[in-house]
Image 1 (cartoon, helix red, strand yellow):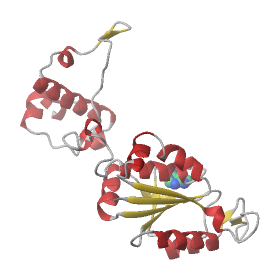
Image 2 (image 1 turned 180 degrees about the vertical axis):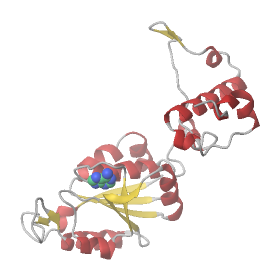
Image 3 (image 1 turned 90 degrees about the vertical axis):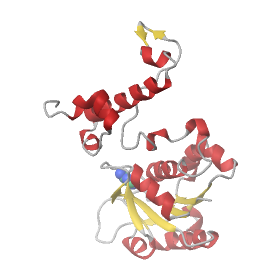
Image 4 (image 1 turned 135 degrees about the horizontal axis):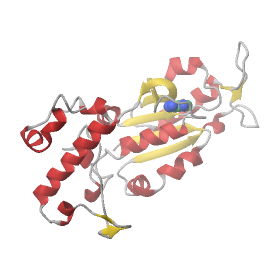
Length: 248
Ligand code: ADE
């Protein structure tokens, strides 16, 4: 079973997300194990302080290596085998669905470390951390949002976490495509009608329409993703114009 532990100054932030909804249910059903650890408990002073001013001067505070190392050593001892340790920062490799799959396939034990303030002592990163991950080219106030995003994306790939009706269709035959539009009741809302094909009960035509819509929206919004798609015969027959040179 996949086990993810998170070291943070704000475990309640992580628990709020990872204790609710699909991931919360999967944890209760023992499909995945997630534990959050309060870094402050590994402080060496009565105030629970874990940060200090940076050498060389400058603004902000740096989380010290000692409490981080003590906390990591403790958490590592709880894992059945040595976990893959990830630190979240804008300097890391940029997260994607591919990396989510790779993490799930290569490591059953993951340990996430969240920084806050101006970061953590470089020596801790050098000694403990296997890789740094960023969730995009912007700066957050801490690693918690990134840790929760990555934990969610990895957890939903684990067996039994999604129920059959939540299954990851976006990764099977919709792989590499943006999702087609969805509609629910009523069939007419504010004068806007649900596309006829979806009401037809004709499953093959529905599947074709959904694939076409996914191809169209991917070309429009993510030409970078679209350029990697290799159309099959049925794609070319249905929406072959998407691959014609004049179609910009
Ligand atoms: N910490 C601060 N900004 C971040 C980002 N973009 N990704 C991951 N961790 C972060």
